[in-house]
Image 1 (spheres, rainbow, N blue to C red):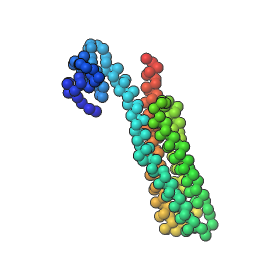
Image 2: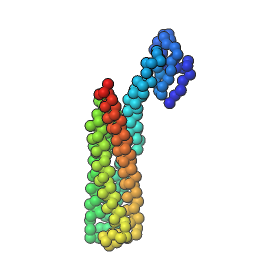
Image 3: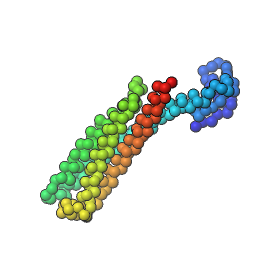
Image 4: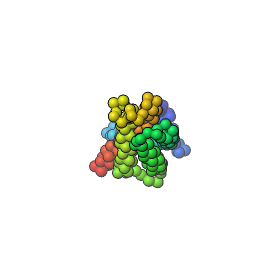
Length: 220
């Protein structure tokens, strides 16, 4: 939070004026104001506007995160899944079950769809300055991402079972090298999952603050 001297406060507050019409300005957070009376309760008003301003910080934070991390991470994970499919064909073709190959193929499709219809669509909504996002809109984004996290958990549990030596299925199908490969793949999937779980957390916090904001606005 920037802190200004009295002179800087006056200059900042009076930007656009050819003269300085106000003196004795004060700062509250990132806001600059002129108090006209000791009982005007301006700090309470500014607290309200500060909370409203902070709502936009969620939009900025989520947008930057998805752009800088998720948008690039999705194709990278998709490439790893395609390589895993090639690994299956090269090393496991002679083995009897194709359940693992089917699971990996299904998740490839899930990643592709999620990247196009959730991540890119979310960015388009967040960066559209002509539209405001309602609580319902935030909830929809949150639900889409939470559903992806749940589907990812299902695959991770399956891979974990294959890697485990206690599994009645895996030892007959996978040797030590195979299980190490699957462990690395599961780690990559889990990393991407964590990114989406963070999105869910940010969206939930944004939704909660927006609901509080709407409630207080309705009471005024």
